[in-house]
Image (cartoon, rainbow, N blue to C red; front, top):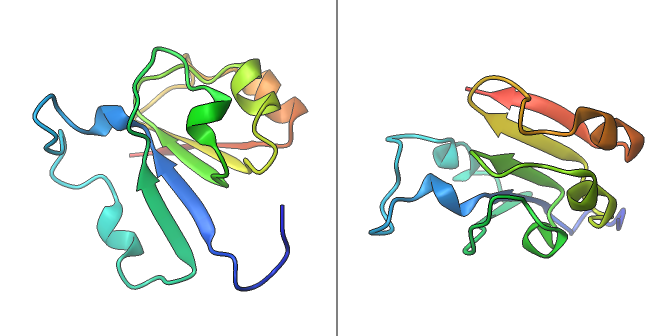
Length: 110
C-alpha cells in the first residue's frame, strides 16, 4: 500500500446493498458519512457472488460486506485490504482467523 497522503482511503460496498432495480435496500447504509471527506473514496462492487473475491476487493483498503462470505482466499489475495466491516451482526460469514493471519481488521457496522 502506498503511504502517499494524496491517495484516498478506498472503501468498497458489496453489491447486495442494492435491490434488483438498483435501488438501495436500506434507507441509509453509511454513504452520507463520506460526502464531505475527500480523503475517502468509495465505490460499489458491481458483481455479486456468494464469496467476496480478491478481484471484487481490488485496491480497496476497506470493504463493507452485507452477505457474501469473506474467506482466506478473499483476504490473502487482497494486499491493500486493511479492514472488513460486516454490516449487521455476527461474524458467521467471515473467516476471522484468516483475517487475523493477514492483518485485516474485522468490525461490525450496524
